Structures are given as structure tokens and as C-alpha cells.
Length: 279
Image 1 (cartoon, rainbow, N blue to C red):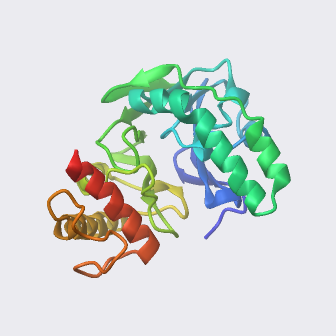
Image 2 (image 1 turned 30 degrees about the vertical axis):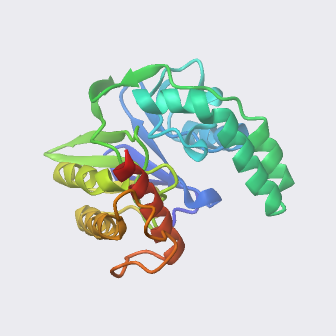
Image 3 (image 1 turned 45 degrees about the vertical axis):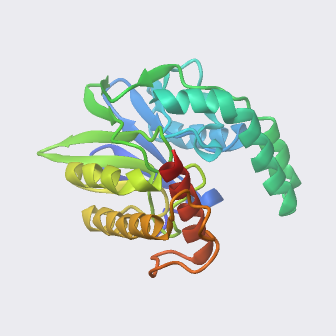
């Protein structure tokens, strides 16, 4: 199910907007006199569209959270200033360090697919790194509502932040960023595949309601458990295919067991895992 870029209420005054562009999810938590925005899209034009959608729901001032440092989730940050923007400390540092490179790569990818307009918008997006930092855990009170920002371990990146929104009566909504991916395989380009299953295990233990992935449809605890099981298979493939330094095996060649993902995704995961094993 898609929301048609409308807000879908997944908990008490907790909304998700699923976008046609990149199948990206953004979140909105509405409190009494403030709101929380989760991720800001890939350029200022899309951020402006998101702001207009937010203002159709609430006129309250916002605080922003970036789930991680990838361009598609945070290149709209500048449109939300001067509000505070929260992120995991390594994600903020990564965006400051890699933002220019990410912008160039994303713009070139858009040009390569004939989207010069999109490339120009990405190229003009300011790199605006978060200024409020989370090491392991921070509790925010947003308009009287309790929101926990948690770093549960490395996975999709080394700075993935989980946003846990208390909805009362023992329930919560979790925005998992790209630690959880629905509709496509997880992204391993900057990943730590040997850590990811354990991180998903910790996330699984927190689930008491809907889980909003970074991309795709809203999921549940069974989905998170299934992705954890897939990551355990990837972990085993990495370790079984690694021989000493890793140089003795061809990472693009046959693997010792079946993978839950396509060949391109699997070989990327294996390459990243070998990098971890080499230290």
C-alpha cells in the first residue's frame, strides 16, 4: 500500500508520508505545542514539498531528526533551519565529511538517467550537518510527547539512529531508517554486515507496534525478525567465503550457500564484510 504522498497515521498523532521519489518515508510526530520531523528528503525542492505537507497537518514549530547521513534522507535539512537537527554523532561527522562527494555522485547518477533537472536540484542542495548529537540515547520531550533517539549498533551505516515514539498504553511507533528496508534489498554500500543482525535483534526487542522503514511500506515485528534472519545468512556467507586475508577467494565468484538477496547485493555485502574481517 502507498499513501499517495498523503500522511498515513500509524499511531496517535504519528504520521508517515511515503514518497514516489525513491519510495522514501518521512515521519511527523505532533505534540501539544511542537512537532518532530523525521528525515528531510534529497534536495530543497522536495523539502519544501514536505514542509507544505506538514503545514497542512500542524502549524507547530518543529525539531528535526536525521536517521543517518545518506543524501536522500538529509539534503533537505537547510529548509528546516533554524530548527535544531538531531543525529547520531558519527552520522553528523560523516555528512560533514562526505556530503560534497555524496552530492556529486547523486547528481551524476541523476544525469546518467536523463534527469538533468533533478541533478541540478541535488547539486544546489546545501550540506547542512546536524547540530544536536546522540551517542547512545537521548530522550526528547516534543510538545509533551516522549521520543527516544537510540543508537543500537552499526548496520546500514555506523551512525543509524532509531526514533521510538511513545504512543501510550505500552505501544510505540519506531522509525528505523534504512536499518529496515521494505520492497528492495537493504543497501550495503556503507554497511557493516557483520554487525547488522545483532543491531536488528536489539531493534526487534523494542518493537511494540508499527515499524517505519526508510523506504517502502510500514512493517511489523515479524518483518524485522525476518530481515534479521536474512542478515544472519549474509553473515555466514561472508565468513564461509573469507579465506585468510580474503585474497584467496573471488568475491564475485560462487558463494558457499544460497543468499536471500540478488547476486549484485550479495557480492556487495560480502565485499563489505571482508573489509570488516580484514580490519
